[in-house]
Image (cartoon, rainbow, N blue to C red; front, side):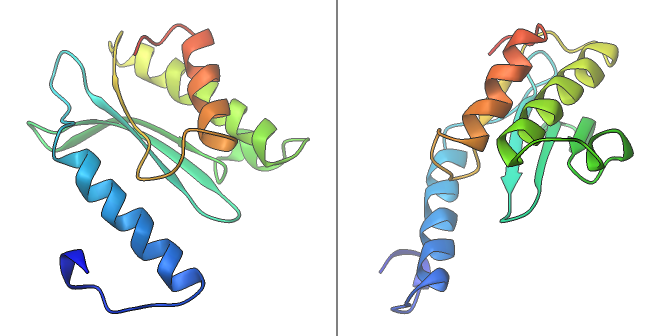
Length: 127
């Protein structure tokens, strides 16, 4: 198996598959000063979005479900992902970012990942 992974079962196999996909995606995607990378990290409970300039190695803006404004939010996890997407887009625009490269972090573009991306687009962030 690629990347030195042992044969795994269950959730460990899923995490290893996500890691392989993320490595494969990161070969092609990199954030610059003009178009930083919007990376999404998803767990079972929370979702985190960061706008990163890979050339400098700096995080320009970030938002997550752990933020005080989103933490007590109503709705399911997809609704919270929409709030995070709008919040990260607002913070990125305040930092002077107009367009980003979307990095889904090895996750499928569906559900919470798609909800976050759609909310960021609606808030005016271009990808």
